[in-house]
Amino acid sequence: MATLFDPLQAGDLALSNRIVMAPLTRNRSPDAVPGDLSVTYYRQRASAGLIVTEATAISHQGQGYADVPGLYGSEQLAGWKRVTDAVHEAGGKIVVQLWHVGRISHNSLQPGGGKPVAPSAIRAKSKTYLIRPDGSGEFAETSEPRALDAHEIPGIVDDFRRAARAAIEVAGFDGVEIHAANGYLIDQFLRSGSNHRTDNYGGSIENRTRFLFEVVDAVAGAAGSGRTGIRLSPVTPANDASDPEPQPLFEHVASGLGSRGLAYIHVIEGATGGGRDFQQGDKPFDYAAFKAAYRNAGGRGAWLVNNGYDKDLAEKVVAEGPADLVAFGKLFIANPDLVRRLKDNVALNAPDKATFYGGGARGYIDYPTAA
Ligand code: 8OZ
Image (cartoon, rainbow, N blue to C red):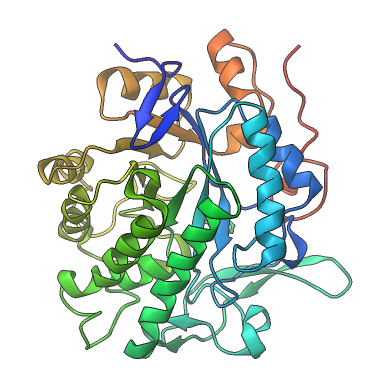
């Protein structure tokens, strides 16, 4: 029976164990450049089987929060190269999460102070995080977006392609993860609550999933399909994501992904950071049918699960199914040596919520490792 501490081959990624560091937004990259603190933070966590970086904007337009990193300029790529070198020196593997926030943004973060872009001009009931001129942080309502013109969509697909290529060739990542979860741009296209388009990117399930598959094909073409993963959150209400019928939608996504040779599928079960049983529509989501749709379509990638796992539940899903890999978020914030602590049953440090977003070294690189 598989354990959390066994190696796994996920596509082209040879992982030393089944414990993944989840993507975690930390807002410590002024000018979108990861700096010394981030080099230390990721190096400290290199014993994870795989690190998925915090969500990283593929373009200035894809930015939605203060001090989150990007992949679109040479300084940002150079900052990330220092991170990947440090993780590799420490024996780890690291992929970058490719992010376009769509409507979850604020005019003040957009090129020229313009409106954020979205499938449709529907404002999200959600907040973003800004930093005031005096350096203090504040949560602010997301701005009114404008609907993308169909002729702009290939340019965004190109931004994903360019970011994926630079991530591998310049920044030295082992792979990339497409962020298609949590109510950001790709998820906004998927769900009927945020996509009211009447062209071939809206309406039917085939049309609402078109943008996702275009991005997957572009990114997998640039990074290599065996170095590409994708994160999905079939029922999350995060960032005002809503769709009354997630089952057929996400089974269509899963079967389309099955033939694309990806390294892994990363599934947030339930409400992101909240209840694992959360549902949208009138039926509980059937994760087994979702996974079966992927395997039945030929999908061979690793099945990576996330949301509220502790050691017992993680061991169970890796031993008995359905998972090959388990991602831990808050536990990795507070425990740089989480793999060793889980293996040796060492008590865990508790995460400090007050230092999750923004700030400096405190709550970022000062959690102790076990003696
Ligand atoms: C927390 C704060 C800001 C962004 C996500 C990228 O939910 C995020 C995020 C999380 O996927």
